[in-house]
Length: 119
Length: 168
Image 1 (tube, rainbow over the protein chains, first blue to last red):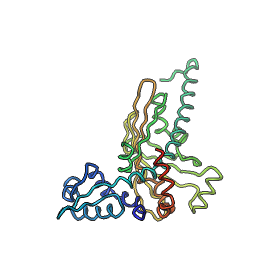
Image 2 (tube, rainbow over the protein chains, first blue to last red):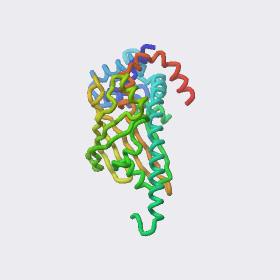
Image 3 (cartoon, chains in turn green, orange):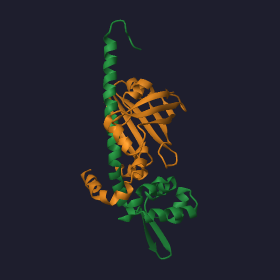
């Protein structure tokens, strides 16, 4: 499964992310991607080749024409990759919740003190 | 399908709903004491040196490993036990939305880049809904994972992540 080695590099590039977003609409030819993504044809071809080599994009020849589409498998894997990152943020927001609880307690304590109104 | 779309864009959205006052929620992001009270991954604390909660205002803090385990772990990875972080508030609408742009320029051998955290707040009765949108693919943590050789081990991890994906 060598194609998965470059999951990060393949999508790290903003132009390639734009191409991927364009392909979300479905299978397309290079010219359509050029028009929709607003990137020069030579750039699109090069980036499509990288996305193809890294397994994100499938190419289907049809006579003279070549159609490009997203391959779902690496995106599912990417979602798995995001899991540890998501967990890190879930833990961070757990601490946010705890800090917020503490702050709310202080606010309530202040509010009940006579003569210590908070605007 | 939302989750897949997020992954395709390299974005991750995490939403929480708190029974709390909107000002308290906002203050945890925009005041020194508030920010220090929760930020920093497990095993780290932060010392904020500057927090200027205005559009373009600076947010500077030192990220410090503060458990013996984390200090040892950083040492074994050849990383310093603390590092300064330069960020700024690139968007700010009080109690509605803020965007923090982080400059990731402290990872050795990796060219500097920017990463954004967008937070949207919405009052719903006695609750506040807080939605955090992250540039997951282009983040400090992912870059470190990549640098630490996770990519070269992907084949080994395939089955493990395959399991995780199936559980979701």
